[in-house]
Amino acid sequence: MKTQNIIVVGAGICGLSAAIWLRRAGHDVTLIDKDGPGAGASYGNAGLLAEWAVVPVSGPGIAWMGLKYLMSRDAPLSLQWSQMPRLAPWLAQFLRNSTDTRTRRISAALSHLLHDSVDQHRALTRGTRAERWIASSDFGWAYADRAAFEKDAYTWELRRLAGYVPDVIDGPAVREVVPMLGPATNCLVRLKGHGHIVNPGAYMADLAQVLEDEGGTLRRAEMRDVAMVDGRITEVLTDQGPLPCDTAVLAAGIWSEPLARKLGVRVPLVAERGFHLEFKGPSQVPKMPLMMTGGKFAVNPMEQGLRCAGMVELGGTSAKMSRGPLNLLARNVARVFPGLRYDSVEEWMGYRPSTPDSLPLIGEMGVSGVFAAFGHQHIGLTGGPKTGRWVADMIGGRGNADLQPFDANRFRWS
Image (cartoon, rainbow, N blue to C red; front, side, top):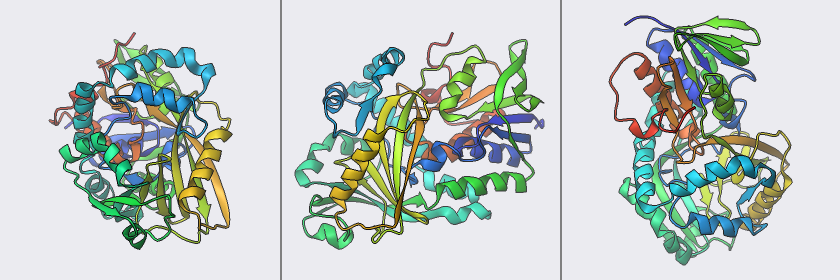
């Protein structure tokens, strides 16, 4: 195998994973990021290794449900109306992917990417300083009652097709499993044998150190442009100067869209602004991560506190914090955990890179020598290690499973 000089752009979970696997394959690897490792969504996510996340956000009935949400101040979806001219084409494609046939096809592709996530994280970190952040756990969905669970039958059918069959717990037994749940929850649906990350920020920092320990290079630099010869990349141009390369990996999350334009291509990627509240010194924590289905937010007991993360605000990448979603998240946390007390709370907002078909872009963009590893929406942490491994295999010329659903050229590029 020929050793290549490879630049990886973006030090979130996808870029870190790609860089580590490429280095292990014997390549000279330099990982660059304008803010350092895990500074964006890879820091602020819910910390779930969501192998079960095989149900796309789009699906039958999403148009009516979305309209209903947008008309309510207590809904987990909001929209920055000033961004509507930019969002409209993306939303049109998104709705075209909401048919039953397309939803099932997307779900099958998600299962292919996610089904062994915990094993992929363990393979990435085995024997390194980073493996300490991976915890084994069950996972639970909290519903108001069994009727609410049964109303969710379509999503559970898709999960069952992917091999996930839950235990259903009703009534007072719910609080025997999760004592801190209040009277708003009377049905708990549990999957056994999953996992989560107990400190995403520290996990990313340790993965960056693993890369350096294994001979890779980490640089604080911002990609500004690329140099091409005969349509193939030869340099990544940064604010710290040019970096020659044989191949590059673009794994910069939401920032991949403007960087892809440097290659002369357009990607239908929009920002789903996500939020978390992290309660420091909590009086109670659950023994396993939870999804609160009424408010559409995840709950994860972490080393540094209890993180409650979720909400979707479609909009741009302005750094201005939106108060509405954060206030709603706080109200929902108080409703489902009425006895929770804490010392302080951290507020965070970040950007999920979302495609209109809920699938990431993985693979070479044209014949440019630049490989995409971005667009993971809500599943970046879960699917990052496998994405990085797939990209490393492609660059090394090794065979791979059918990745057509993730084809980096599947959208109309111009």
